[in-house]
Length: 436
Image 1 (cartoon, rainbow, N blue to C red):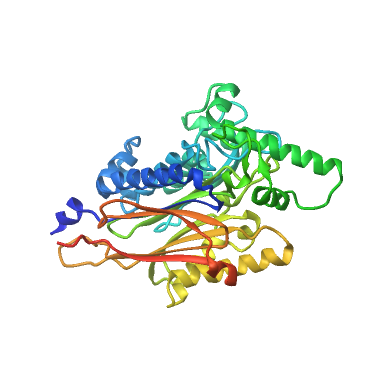
Image 2: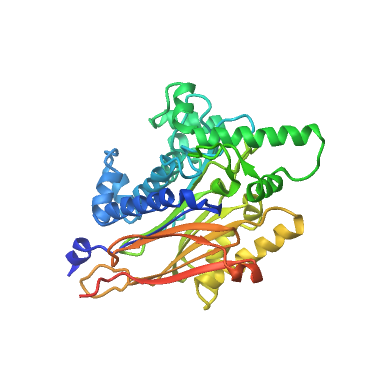
């Protein structure tokens, strides 16, 4: 009956913790972060759409506003926000707390969210935390998307979808988002000892390279050093010397894709950016069509539920609108999501090779079967196909569906296949109805 879908809502959530190199010594903490993120989203999605609508719009007294938005898959405000917040408060990921530092030793974050039904998109770039600032940039991105759904503001002004730098911080403060009180509080919360030590090491490398007037790529030098040279700043190393492979080299974003019982899909991405980035750089996680994408229709208007997150060498992925192109490719092809991911990633790898830049990247794609609709019943999600393709040394992913007992998480690592083709992939089909 109609109440059955509300009592046993089906759902699916997929997350990633970036492409690059994840040190085996940190694998346990990364897997734990992904599990907690999946469980946090599931705890919301299990409650059903109407519970989320009541919570999502509890701050709005205008009944007309609420009625206008009841069709909107408002789960994104919780599941998309909640997952990156879990990641951003976890120092093992490159988002929020524990982020890579800029050239001048501070944290600047990028983030975006997108709703598949409406196309609502909100993002922020280079949000500063070096002054009294925002702990979780994803909260600003979510609020930007939410306000789009409310329509024009005073005097018909168009609500913004993308804010950067100090302007994003000021706007967040005007909307009541919590800011850190002082610079010292921001640094204490966001800048971990591991990130500070990594910054000191890479900053010294940069200064040395500039002094010697070398023209080689600093990022390539850092990756080569990470693979081959010893490090004296590895966390937990009693002797002070260890292999550089005990350090993480996570290129960019964390991301999440959520689908609720009626097939509403949303995606989100958040990042601290690449290590030693130029202050003010806006990265992949904030760029429209690049870091995340979600859609409930194909390019010709037919129903097609798909969401994507991309991570890695941001400039190459941004040039190709990686997340959007992956969703479009999946909708136009009958070969499945893994083929779409690999096709887009291959073009990124080729472009990077031609320009001599880092080719490390990962793409996570979720494609949902059209929900089943029966007389007197609400639509119910049937199954999910997901795929992850990566050209990096590792790619951390996790997923959880309503038919599963617990989340599945894994740090995927490069194989012999990647040695031949430059790309590895993982794929799975997840039925969402529990077997009796």
